[in-house]
Length: 129
Image (cartoon, rainbow, N blue to C red; front, top):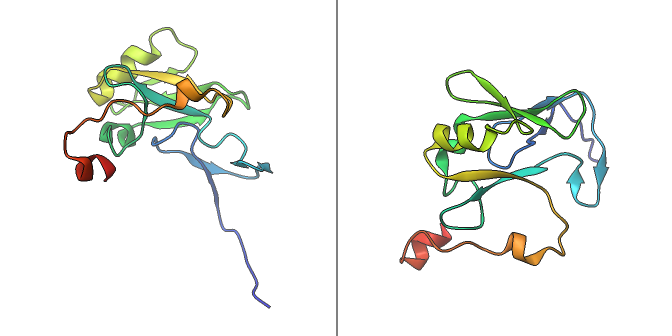
């Protein structure tokens, strides 16, 4: 019989931003509750984008604020901004060099929300990478 052990549990509150470890977590049919609860929408090209298209996201880290669904994002200069701050989108956009908006997870039935944005390249192989 194979024995498994868990050394650390990592949660990434915002897709493609650095996350952190938690002592415990709840798991449902979608995975770890709270993992990738937030994402970044590319305003200029449309669509939810990750680090593959917006590499600067990996220079930011996010953590939940006091067990709420609000996240606090640490920017590359060490300053912090909360997702409920009116300046959050502007500060994150400046930090990664792209016009973006933080968006909370929506139901899977919201097809327009999850529709793929315009390609950022005419080269289909490049687009798929």
